[in-house]
Length: 484
Image (cartoon, rainbow, N blue to C red; front, side, top):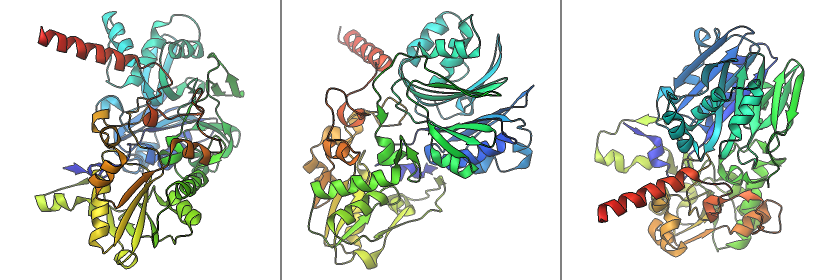
């Protein structure tokens, strides 16, 4: 059995999506809708916890939202006017039911469930210390350290304990939590991962993206600020700023690829941002050609921008099959070799005899780009020029994006020309780092205080990477022992 992701490794893997609702009838049903809208952020698993004023109800399962939350027999028992939900793509922890969020725990003050988008970069270190002191962990996800830290803090209410726990963690996170009479949303001090606030009737909603509000018919109010904690309860929305002020470092890859194009993030339309990036790319990396072709679907807005900026016609030269399932039985080596055509096929009428510009959002390992370039040549393209709407991805992400280790990133091992040779393109160009920032409305990247988190391009990580440092030390110690 092979997942279709095996043919999609030129993209960074999705993160997670979260929804929290308070004060709305059938909150769990609306949460299901919100998770549908956020399905692009995680397809491995989904979970919902609701509260009806007296009792918590939950359902968690592997697979897509539609596969697990369509039946009334599942959604009906999730009673109450408050609920939180999560869709997961694993960045830490194995793919298993025990790691499906939200995590629920009965603590001294009562029950609480927590769901998380992002990655805690010192979770392994915290976990080791807590296990030494007798804590028992049920899952292998970094999120589980949060309720454990809350349990060991013996003072204050649920909000106080959550704040205390978050003061002990590093990394990037947007978190939703549900307790007896409230839903809590909180965003890390750097604001790396997204979270928005909405209103529906007398109730309120927090979610990863505005597209989740749209599907519920809710009104967008604003983004949750970096380092802000909001309490949704019978009093409405209460805002707190429990962390020391820090320089905002929102993940720029949300604009490039991760977010849905119909979402608005930090006041910016994702669709328009991608078109501007494409237009800037056309100015930086022009080439004589007959047609601009997107690698669907994520390359479409940038390709539109490139076409408009260059004056070269835009055409759908690659047609995507949207009905390929998550898995596919591969009975022969021949089928395995043809795997890329499961998702993409050349539109020969728009490719044959043409000099084409392929626009995609990123190259990670390069294998899919290589197959698509080959497909274009087989369809009769006379020249194939590849243009990428992000700078070269040369470093791993430790903030909630599933990236390969650095040694497997093509840009970490090869020059741009070597990458072009590897994928078989006549030319290859990436948008420059300053060009990306110009497209986002800045004069360029502030090297002293960057406006975004761009660590996957620069290696400039905005937080401590405790677990990575400890892992490196352990590896060096092991090598020293072996050589002794």
